[in-house]
Amino acid sequence: MDVEAFEEAAVTARREGEPAAYRAALDLYAGELLPADRYEEWAEDRRQQLRRLYLALLVELAGIYEERGENGPAIEALTRVTAEEPAHAALMRLYALSGSRTEALRQYERLKEALPKELGVRPSASSRALRDEIAWSSFSPEGRRNRVIPLEEPTLKR
Image 1 (spheres, rainbow, N blue to C red):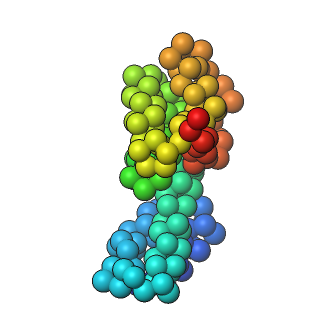
Image 2 (cartoon, one colour):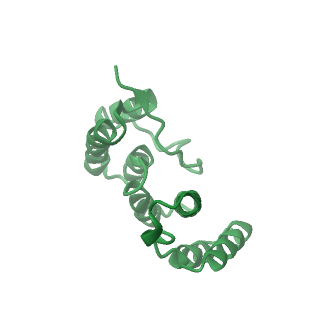
């Protein structure tokens, strides 16, 4: 991966705030930096830094799409994030906004399964409350659009 090109494209995407610029930057991320140097500390730090930038760009792109009311592309971007980070709650909200209550509830189940396995924690109170709103059909899209998409903040397992 050309690190400089990726980082420059990320700066451009953030400056322009357009989905096309974000997609161009994301396309430059070709995976881990120097995967053969797994145990080189300098490479690991840089690898993690670039990975965080890639994930942040995906979350920002999803936020842009959500602000535009384009839930499908927002869901697609966040789905790519969930392979790396627990962004399940944001996906639940987007599915609910799209009118797909069943898929929103399925996403909560994925979250409920993934967090204990991967992080040893359970879903946060806000994720559980969102799930309840969706399950009991009290979820209202009013006031739910144009919000920054948060990554899941897990709570410790008790």
